[in-house]
Length: 263
Image (cartoon, rainbow, N blue to C red; front, side, top):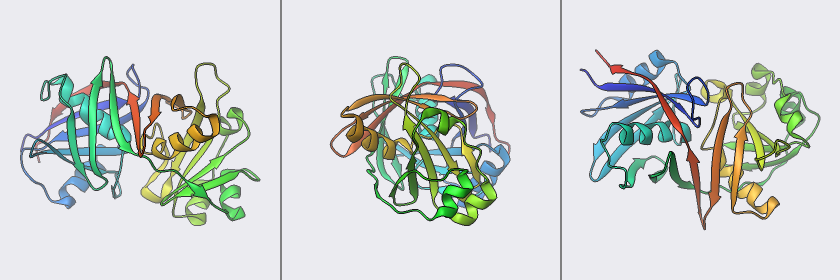
C-alpha cells in the first residue's frame, strides 16, 4: 500500500513533450502480474518499478502489454526521480540491476547520463512487406537482435512516414527503427521508433534504440559524440557518446505529477 508513483516526461526540458513514463518506488517485492496491472492502468509506453537492492536498485520495465528487457526513457525518468527527491545525492552514481545487466546513471548538470550497452547492428535483408507496411519502397537495413534499423535518404522521408501498424505487426515481430542523417541544424541524425509487437505503435523517444543508432551513426559519420532528435509527434533530444562497448545517453526530464498507489 501507498507506494509512491511519479509521472515524468523524459528526454525533454519542458512538460508535455518527450516520452512520458511512470516511475513506482516500491517498498517491497511485488508479483510481476501486479506490476503488469499497474502498467496497464497507467497506460503509458513504459512504467518502471524500482526496489532497493544492495547498493542500488532492482529495475523492471513494463509496457501496458508486456515486460521488456531494456528501456531508456523510463530509466532516465527513474534516475531523475531519485535525484530530484534526494533519494540519491547529486554526486552519487545510481546502479540499476536489470535483465540487461548493470546499468548506471550519473547527474551531469541539468542532464542525466545513462551508461547502456552498445548494440551495433549487422547487415540484414528485409522482405518487401516490411517496407510496404512502412509506406516506403526500399532502405538500407541492418539488425541487432530484436531491433531492425532502416536508413532512409532524408530527414523529410523519416518525418513523413505514415506506417500501417496492423501490416507492420504482420510483417515482423521485431521493433523497427527508421533513421536518416539530420538536416535540422544542431543535430547529427534523426529517428523514429515503431514497436506494435510490444503494444506501442510509435514510441515518442526511445533511449534503447540509441544503443543501436549510436554505433551505427558513429561509424558512418566518424564521430564519437553526437546529438540526436527523435522525430515523433512529441519529439525528444538526446546527446549520445560511443565508448568501447558502451553507449552513454544524456537526456533531461520533468516531473509532471506524483502520488501514491492505493492497491
